[in-house]
Image 1 (cartoon, rainbow over the protein chains, first blue to last red):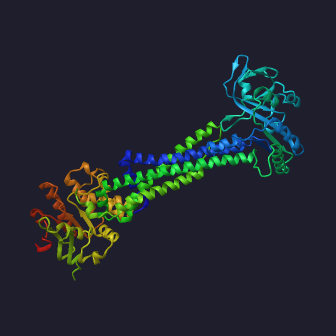
Image 2 (spheres, each protein chain N blue to C red; image 1 turned 135 degrees about the vertical axis):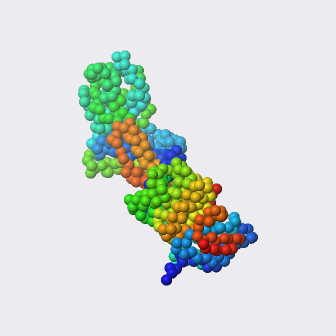
Image 3 (cartoon, rainbow over the protein chains, first blue to last red; image 1 turned 90 degrees about the vertical axis):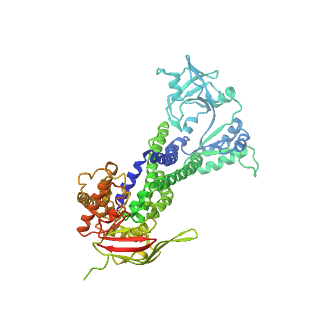
Length: 411
Length: 229
């Protein structure tokens, strides 16, 4: 019998029990949805990682107390927390010792969740307060769009000067008012706005423009003196980058007073290390999603097998009739196998469609272009076919091997 | 010279094991059917009628002995060869009709042709032709549930005829029909016999057997009598 006939036959059989077929299909759809949804979302985020994580300028690395991401239990979190803070004095010493091998060396401290006020407007407590120096903007890829950057003397005299991010500007000065030389209040401290940064956009759905930058010396004097400083180092050139990295590590070890055998008690963040650590997260999430999806697909496969066994029992007489008019075993086998395959593949298609939609909704939230994870679509289709075959073969085999005399016997 | 018989059975036995007992459903049957035979196999229930029909119809194989159908030894066939033999050589008519309820008459009748690999257009034509032959030219798109018992049995006869089988095998074809309809159906078989078909009926009704030209009586798995008109 031709394949086309078998397909028509399988479809018409399935359409008899629409609800039952649909419910079985849903099982597969959920499994495929979970993997495709997660993978689409991950791929979407991945696309933004290069731009989002290369927030550091070119040839730049950062030294700080914590690594970019801390994985695992509270134990490893405590391990990093128990390190000594990088103090301003250490930072200054460090700068002095590698001044010649770097183009710029910048210091940063940040605290999140602050509230800024101007002329009766009060922001949500979600403003980032950054203490930095004149090198901050270059090292972090910000451009000053109005006013001026921090100057060396601002730092030296710990002036109450501030540059504000574009989003904070919009919130505090909604009418297009020029913020320069205006006084804003953050956590009770008054700052004079000396400049505004250009919009940088969001990374990971988080705005990078809702912040203000004040001199780090001011931060240490008036905001929090016990903060660990992050040091950004820009190498002289691409070629000098590895050497600068080595020198910086050596200098930092001396500044921190480490013995020869002591491990580093600070972390180096490079654009690459950030991307690497994101890849770690990504692979953990994707293998988790894969395992969960595979389990749910197995469950769906058992559902298919179950429903196909019921179907074989219900259609014993039909099988008997088909056999009596000359249907060979392979033809019956193919008919039932195709039904199982159809259930799982349609489930797969639905899962892929819904998964891509959901994943791209996530992508949309991150302001990312739409994504089609072709690899995972292919994997899902192959896995679905495999599930359909694996769980359909036994019921189909059972149907094909029914004894026609028994099958035709009136019940 | 006379043609060789369509069916030759020699010392054909079928035994079933029921627990520690062996039931001799068919015991040393020797029987021939020639082309154009119109025979009734009769006997009380348990006489082995159904078993004999299953073996003639290639639904089952004998325990021992020879069953030759058009020169092929059916006893040595595997499942797929039996399926092929059913498709090519046998047309079944059952007491319970055995049509597929979801398919209309045309689709039911063409079913054997699907497994014979006949292309759709030709199938359609031949099925329509077979339905016209049994007087159902105007019921082709009806489903079995929309027809009377007599009409359903005529659809089943059309299906049995479609692949031009060597034998039409009818198992109590009038068992579920009233007397008048039974008469109609038997007339159809009579006509089919006159145009050269080989027909074997299984029945326990003398009235029905009387329509045929040869009556074979079974008792306890053995042939009691075999008489031609």
